[in-house]
Image 1 (cartoon, rainbow over the protein chains, first blue to last red):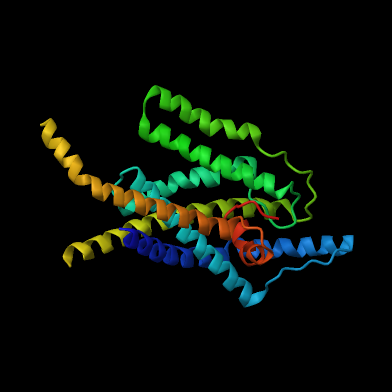
Image 2: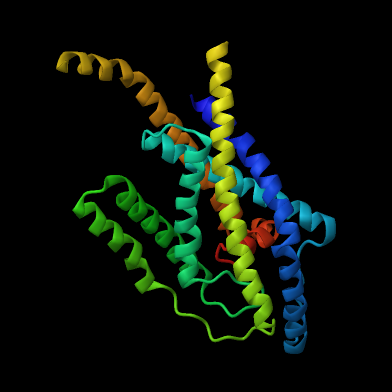
Length: 220
Length: 61
Protein backbone atom coordinates (compact mmCIF):
# COMPACT_ATOMS: atom_id res chain seq x y z
CA UNK A 1 0.00 0.00 0.00
CA UNK A 2 2.75 2.45 0.98
CA UNK A 3 4.67 1.60 -2.20
CA UNK A 4 1.58 2.10 -4.36
CA UNK A 5 0.78 5.47 -2.76
CA UNK A 6 4.35 6.71 -3.19
CA UNK A 7 4.64 5.42 -6.77
CA UNK A 8 1.33 7.08 -7.64
CA UNK A 9 2.41 10.36 -6.05
CA UNK A 10 5.76 10.44 -7.82
CA UNK A 11 4.42 9.54 -11.30
CA UNK A 12 1.41 11.88 -11.07
CA UNK A 13 3.50 14.70 -9.61
CA UNK A 14 6.23 14.30 -12.20
CA UNK A 15 3.82 14.49 -15.15
CA UNK A 16 1.74 17.29 -13.59
CA UNK A 17 4.90 19.18 -12.61
CA UNK A 18 6.34 19.02 -16.12
CA UNK A 19 3.07 20.32 -17.57
CA UNK A 20 2.84 23.12 -14.99
CA UNK A 21 6.52 24.03 -15.49
CA UNK A 22 5.83 24.42 -19.22
CA UNK A 23 2.79 26.56 -18.40
CA UNK A 24 4.85 28.73 -16.03
CA UNK A 25 7.45 29.20 -18.72
CA UNK A 26 4.87 30.93 -20.90
CA UNK A 27 2.68 32.65 -18.29
CA UNK A 28 4.24 33.66 -14.95
CA UNK A 29 8.00 33.52 -15.65
CA UNK A 30 7.98 36.20 -18.40
CA UNK A 31 6.12 38.53 -16.00
CA UNK A 32 8.68 37.81 -13.23
CA UNK A 33 11.53 38.56 -15.62
CA UNK A 34 9.85 41.79 -16.74
CA UNK A 35 9.33 42.84 -13.10
CA UNK A 36 13.00 42.14 -12.35
CA UNK A 37 14.00 44.74 -14.90
CA UNK A 38 12.14 47.34 -12.80
CA UNK A 39 13.50 45.83 -9.56
CA UNK A 40 17.09 45.98 -10.83
CA UNK A 41 16.67 49.57 -11.98
CA UNK A 42 15.26 50.44 -8.56
CA UNK A 43 18.17 48.69 -6.80
CA UNK A 44 20.71 50.43 -9.03
CA UNK A 45 19.06 53.72 -8.15
CA UNK A 46 19.40 52.86 -4.45
CA UNK A 47 22.99 51.70 -4.94
CA UNK A 48 22.26 48.03 -4.08
CA UNK A 49 23.68 45.30 -6.32
CA UNK A 50 21.45 42.23 -6.32
CA UNK A 51 20.79 40.05 -9.33
CA UNK A 52 19.06 36.69 -9.73
CA UNK A 53 21.14 33.65 -8.66
CA UNK A 54 20.25 31.68 -11.78
CA UNK A 55 19.73 32.79 -15.34
CA UNK A 56 18.86 31.34 -18.72
CA UNK A 57 18.56 27.59 -19.06
CA UNK A 58 19.75 26.81 -15.52
CA UNK A 59 17.03 29.08 -14.16
CA UNK A 60 14.36 27.29 -16.23
CA UNK A 61 15.73 23.93 -15.03
CA UNK A 62 15.80 24.99 -11.36
CA UNK A 63 12.24 26.34 -11.62
CA UNK A 64 11.05 23.13 -13.28
CA UNK A 65 12.62 20.94 -10.57
CA UNK A 66 11.01 23.05 -7.84
CA UNK A 67 7.63 22.90 -9.59
CA UNK A 68 7.89 19.11 -9.95
CA UNK A 69 8.75 18.82 -6.24
CA UNK A 70 5.69 20.90 -5.32
CA UNK A 71 3.48 18.85 -7.67
CA UNK A 72 4.64 15.53 -6.16
CA UNK A 73 3.95 17.07 -2.76
CA UNK A 74 0.44 18.14 -3.86
CA UNK A 75 -0.29 14.66 -5.27
CA UNK A 76 0.87 12.95 -2.05
CA UNK A 77 -1.15 15.34 0.14
CA UNK A 78 -4.30 14.70 -1.93
CA UNK A 79 -3.76 10.91 -1.82
CA UNK A 80 -3.29 11.09 1.96
CA UNK A 81 -6.46 13.19 2.35
CA UNK A 82 -8.52 10.71 0.33
CA UNK A 83 -7.13 7.72 2.23
CA UNK A 84 -7.77 9.37 5.60
CA UNK A 85 -11.34 10.32 4.71
CA UNK A 86 -12.02 6.84 3.29
CA UNK A 87 -12.74 8.15 -0.21
CA UNK A 88 -12.43 6.06 -3.33
CA UNK A 89 -9.36 7.32 -5.23
CA UNK A 90 -10.52 8.14 -8.78
CA UNK A 91 -9.56 10.91 -11.25
CA UNK A 92 -12.68 13.08 -11.00
CA UNK A 93 -12.95 12.82 -7.21
CA UNK A 94 -9.24 13.53 -6.80
CA UNK A 95 -9.50 16.60 -9.05
CA UNK A 96 -12.36 17.87 -6.83
CA UNK A 97 -10.15 17.39 -3.75
CA UNK A 98 -7.58 19.41 -5.67
CA UNK A 99 -10.14 22.16 -6.24
CA UNK A 100 -10.84 22.25 -2.50
CA UNK A 101 -7.12 22.43 -1.75
CA UNK A 102 -6.79 25.31 -4.22
CA UNK A 103 -9.58 27.20 -2.46
CA UNK A 104 -7.59 26.81 0.78
CA UNK A 105 -4.03 27.47 -0.42
CA UNK A 106 -4.84 29.78 -3.35
CA UNK A 107 -8.05 31.74 -2.89
CA UNK A 108 -8.14 32.12 0.91
CA UNK A 109 -4.44 33.01 1.20
CA UNK A 110 -4.57 35.46 -1.75
CA UNK A 111 -7.27 37.45 0.00
CA UNK A 112 -4.70 38.45 2.65
CA UNK A 113 -1.50 38.11 0.65
CA UNK A 114 -2.00 38.78 -3.05
CA UNK A 115 0.44 36.90 -5.32
CA UNK A 116 3.51 39.16 -5.55
CA UNK A 117 5.96 40.00 -8.28
CA UNK A 118 9.61 40.34 -7.21
CA UNK A 119 10.39 43.87 -6.06
CA UNK A 120 7.01 44.60 -4.55
CA UNK A 121 6.80 46.00 -1.02
CA UNK A 122 6.66 43.30 1.61
CA UNK A 123 6.47 42.73 5.36
CA UNK A 124 8.41 40.21 7.50
CA UNK A 125 8.67 36.89 5.60
CA UNK A 126 8.27 34.55 8.60
CA UNK A 127 5.06 36.29 9.71
CA UNK A 128 3.65 36.01 6.19
CA UNK A 129 4.59 32.32 5.95
CA UNK A 130 2.99 31.53 9.31
CA UNK A 131 -0.22 33.34 8.36
CA UNK A 132 -0.26 31.61 4.96
CA UNK A 133 0.12 28.13 6.47
CA UNK A 134 -2.40 28.77 9.26
CA UNK A 135 -4.94 30.19 6.81
CA UNK A 136 -4.54 27.31 4.35
CA UNK A 137 -4.92 24.72 7.13
CA UNK A 138 -7.86 26.46 8.79
CA UNK A 139 -9.69 26.99 5.47
CA UNK A 140 -9.05 23.37 4.45
CA UNK A 141 -10.50 22.00 7.70
CA UNK A 142 -13.39 24.48 7.45
CA UNK A 143 -14.24 23.36 3.90
CA UNK A 144 -14.10 19.71 4.98
CA UNK A 145 -16.50 20.45 7.86
CA UNK A 146 -18.90 22.30 5.51
CA UNK A 147 -18.79 19.85 2.61
CA UNK A 148 -18.43 16.51 4.36
CA UNK A 149 -19.76 16.66 7.92
CA UNK A 150 -22.99 18.52 7.21
CA UNK A 151 -24.39 18.96 10.77
CA UNK A 152 -25.40 22.46 11.90
CA UNK A 153 -22.56 22.60 14.42
CA UNK A 154 -20.07 21.51 11.73
CA UNK A 155 -21.42 24.17 9.34
CA UNK A 156 -21.00 26.92 11.93
CA UNK A 157 -17.50 25.73 12.84
CA UNK A 158 -16.65 25.44 9.12
CA UNK A 159 -17.66 29.04 8.35
CA UNK A 160 -15.80 30.27 11.45
CA UNK A 161 -12.63 28.41 10.44
CA UNK A 162 -12.79 29.88 6.92
CA UNK A 163 -13.55 33.47 7.99
CA UNK A 164 -11.44 33.81 11.18
CA UNK A 165 -7.92 33.78 9.64
CA UNK A 166 -8.85 36.72 7.39
CA UNK A 167 -9.09 38.99 10.45
CA UNK A 168 -5.42 38.28 11.20
CA UNK A 169 -4.08 38.91 7.69
CA UNK A 170 -0.65 40.62 7.73
CA UNK A 171 -0.81 44.39 7.30
CA UNK A 172 -0.05 45.34 3.72
CA UNK A 173 3.29 47.06 3.19
CA UNK A 174 3.47 50.63 1.90
CA UNK A 175 3.61 50.30 -1.90
CA UNK A 176 7.10 50.81 -3.32
CA UNK A 177 7.22 48.73 -6.50
CA UNK A 178 8.23 50.40 -9.74
CA UNK A 179 6.61 47.63 -11.82
CA UNK A 180 3.47 48.84 -13.63
CA UNK A 181 0.13 47.91 -12.05
CA UNK A 182 -0.92 46.17 -15.26
CA UNK A 183 2.01 43.78 -14.90
CA UNK A 184 1.17 43.03 -11.26
CA UNK A 185 -2.52 42.47 -12.06
CA UNK A 186 -1.69 40.07 -14.87
CA UNK A 187 0.73 38.26 -12.58
CA UNK A 188 -1.82 37.86 -9.76
CA UNK A 189 -4.37 36.41 -12.17
CA UNK A 190 -1.91 34.07 -13.94
CA UNK A 191 -0.43 32.91 -10.67
CA UNK A 192 -3.84 31.88 -9.34
CA UNK A 193 -4.70 30.12 -12.60
CA UNK A 194 -1.39 28.24 -12.59
CA UNK A 195 -1.91 27.17 -8.99
CA UNK A 196 -5.46 25.99 -9.71
CA UNK A 197 -4.19 23.92 -12.64
CA UNK A 198 -1.36 22.47 -10.50
CA UNK A 199 -3.77 21.16 -7.87
CA UNK A 200 -6.38 19.88 -10.32
CA UNK A 201 -3.79 18.18 -12.51
CA UNK A 202 -1.92 16.63 -9.57
CA UNK A 203 -5.25 15.28 -8.30
CA UNK A 204 -6.63 14.02 -11.61
CA UNK A 205 -3.37 12.31 -12.54
CA UNK A 206 -3.01 10.78 -9.07
CA UNK A 207 -6.50 9.30 -9.47
CA UNK A 208 -5.66 8.00 -12.92
CA UNK A 209 -2.30 6.47 -11.97
CA UNK A 210 -3.84 4.95 -8.82
CA UNK A 211 -6.53 3.27 -10.94
CA UNK A 212 -3.97 1.93 -13.43
CA UNK A 213 -1.73 0.57 -10.65
CA UNK A 214 -4.70 -0.98 -8.84
CA UNK A 215 -5.86 -2.77 -11.99
CA UNK A 216 -2.36 -4.05 -12.52
CA UNK A 217 -2.24 -5.36 -8.96
CA UNK A 218 -5.60 -7.13 -9.34
CA UNK A 219 -4.59 -8.63 -12.68
CA UNK A 220 -1.33 -10.08 -11.38
CA UNK B 1 -26.87 -8.57 11.18
CA UNK B 2 -24.89 -6.87 13.90
CA UNK B 3 -22.58 -9.83 14.26
CA UNK B 4 -22.10 -9.88 10.49
CA UNK B 5 -21.22 -6.19 10.23
CA UNK B 6 -18.91 -6.61 13.18
CA UNK B 7 -17.19 -9.49 11.41
CA UNK B 8 -16.89 -7.33 8.28
CA UNK B 9 -15.31 -4.42 10.11
CA UNK B 10 -12.97 -6.82 11.89
CA UNK B 11 -11.93 -8.27 8.52
CA UNK B 12 -11.38 -4.73 7.18
CA UNK B 13 -9.23 -3.63 10.07
CA UNK B 14 -5.77 -4.68 8.80
CA UNK B 15 -6.27 -2.95 5.43
CA UNK B 16 -7.54 0.13 7.27
CA UNK B 17 -4.41 0.23 9.39
CA UNK B 18 -2.35 -0.15 6.23
CA UNK B 19 -4.23 2.73 4.57
CA UNK B 20 -3.64 4.93 7.62
CA UNK B 21 0.06 4.11 7.59
CA UNK B 22 0.33 4.88 3.88
CA UNK B 23 -1.60 8.13 4.38
CA UNK B 24 0.74 9.19 7.19
CA UNK B 25 3.84 8.51 5.09
CA UNK B 26 2.34 10.34 2.08
CA UNK B 27 1.34 13.30 4.25
CA UNK B 28 4.81 13.70 5.81
CA UNK B 29 6.59 13.36 2.46
CA UNK B 30 4.08 15.61 0.70
CA UNK B 31 4.37 18.41 3.24
CA UNK B 32 8.16 17.93 3.31
CA UNK B 33 8.43 18.48 -0.45
CA UNK B 34 6.12 21.50 -0.42
CA UNK B 35 8.07 22.92 2.55
CA UNK B 36 11.41 22.43 0.81
CA UNK B 37 10.32 24.01 -2.47
CA UNK B 38 7.94 26.64 -1.10
CA UNK B 39 9.11 27.70 2.36
CA UNK B 40 12.63 26.53 3.28
CA UNK B 41 15.08 29.28 4.25
CA UNK B 42 18.50 28.11 2.96
CA UNK B 43 19.56 30.46 0.19
CA UNK B 44 20.14 27.63 -2.29
CA UNK B 45 16.56 26.38 -1.80
CA UNK B 46 15.19 29.91 -2.11
CA UNK B 47 17.21 30.77 -5.21
CA UNK B 48 16.41 27.56 -7.08
CA UNK B 49 12.70 27.68 -6.25
CA UNK B 50 12.35 31.49 -6.53
CA UNK B 51 10.21 31.63 -9.67
CA UNK B 52 8.07 28.67 -8.53
CA UNK B 53 7.44 30.33 -5.15
CA UNK B 54 6.21 33.48 -6.84
CA UNK B 55 4.25 31.60 -9.52
CA UNK B 56 2.38 29.39 -7.03
CA UNK B 57 1.79 32.35 -4.65
CA UNK B 58 3.88 31.08 -1.74
CA UNK B 59 5.11 33.98 0.41
CA UNK B 60 8.54 35.00 -0.92
CA UNK B 61 10.84 37.97 -1.13
